[in-house]
Image (cartoon, rainbow, N blue to C red; front, side):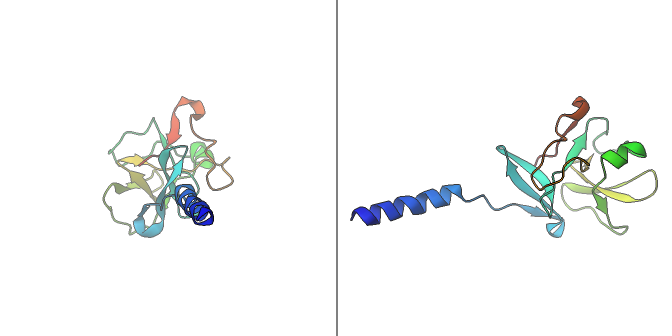
Length: 132
């Protein structure tokens, strides 16, 4: 009886320890992952996505171009990509396409090197985790 209780307890702990299944968007190209209690948007490989306060939600543009885009690469979209729910296509200054979530263009941070890294959060007081 004691062994059964121990096994039941271990099984219950395993359920609580298991990560929640990620929500997937754009055919699995973007997903949400729990990072520090927040549902953060990442790419399919788990690399964190960010938003930029200087962008204007819903205007269909990115203000992070040139040198900015070297440190903050955009989450690129195919030339023929179509809006999907909260995800919209933004045309960049060079004519290429990128994804936006709830109107805010999505970017990577060049110093994030591993899935789950969030070193870009708060940079310059204007870069933030993209949350769902």
